[in-house]
Length: 257
Image 1 (cartoon, rainbow, N blue to C red):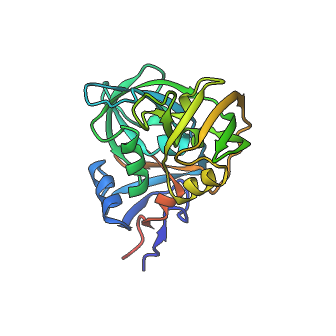
Image 2: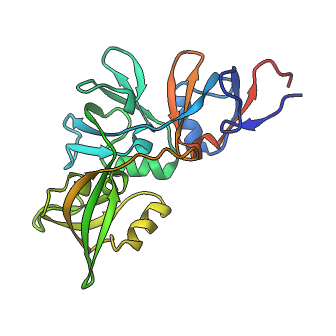
């Protein structure tokens, strides 16, 4: 009898078969990438700490944000079909490589966040560069209170606002902030944990931020947060957030049903 387990529980480096996917939208996104029930795949034994990236949004469909920053977890959820016909997770692109978004390996909240940043399926993009771990030393002004905060690049990428009150609302990321200039917060993206962590720092709609300096940050890879590398029988490589990998049920190939 076959033993079912989540992808996070599955043994590494041996053939697996996808038996079930929790969540209709997540399952549909996997199918559009060619990963369906019965697909054969292998997971790597080591987690992948994907780097943050800066990318350009190309084409007439790009909105106000022509260049955006994505932290490693968000970038890993974007599959890109390159112009030379390779398909790779976004963090594995090299500087200057171009292609279109083949699909999003993500839950609904993450997909909505990416879309809010102007990134969705079939959009053309160019890799600007991979980013080192950074910490944004910031002054937070909120309702008459002033405090200091050290924001990660992932947090800074989730803060939308304006450098000038005359600019369109939520048209810039704080990750693109200029030193010593005011940044007016209009919106905070991400899941409830991200929104809560920023709110606790005083970063919410209506607050004003001033970037003091950008400092190097020591990268700490936590096993529970590193992406899971998955390779299909057809050679497609995916980087899955552990939260998404938990939704995939697999069996070891060769076990009787």
